[in-house]
Length: 97
Image: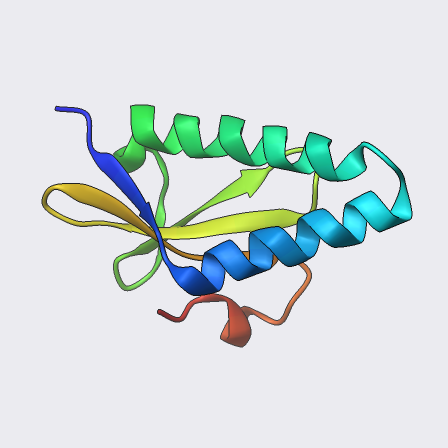
């Protein structure tokens, strides 16, 4: 069964902030980030259990080629994205709901 995906507000804000940063840095780069995020999110939807648990029930997926990760959890009927965060941040700041 294919699960739906819910993106929490904090993750949406991080996506928007990252988009604006990349778009300011280079026109069109923000759009490339959004496209890469969509590819990564679709990969999660297709195979959510294909990603190792890193902290309790939380898993992550890298957004290639950008240094960002999607932190998510699989619930009964959906995938919940809690954070979209720079992979270079300290691990203690990564895995929280």
